[in-house]
Image (cartoon, rainbow, N blue to C red; front, side):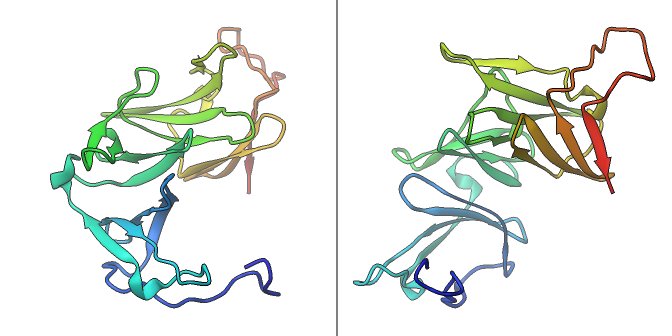
Length: 209
């Protein structure tokens, strides 16, 4: 609420949510909220507004989405790419088809199972391919004529890291949360991974304590 001194108005609790809280949430182009609860239940929440344009949470429609709508196992993460919500399960990544009311498996540049974060200032995508026994981090940069330039080497020094999230920053940099701490990546500091090892080479990574 921009007219409020605090900026936020407390509206109360949403009733009917199993697990008590959400750990992942995104809004689709139709204004619906998709969210994953603490006990891994996927919800679609359709808000209702009163005559003054304020949310009326007592009339929100809360729909717990079951895997009968087309996804296997459990939806662990949801994220947005190019204004569309993607859903990542234990083995695949999906989008939701509103026409058929069903989840559909989807790929990104031949990657079948992945999670990603998009830098909304330049369209660059930071993607984590998920594969059995291993994972790979990718930087996908939009090409002027369409499609993406795939960089699968810049993040190799931390390919074994269990990244919890990536947060793009200015000047081609990004912050990663990992089991080792917070890692800052600066893409402008290039490393030739085919060159002989040299202790004087600058690294694009810096671990912040």
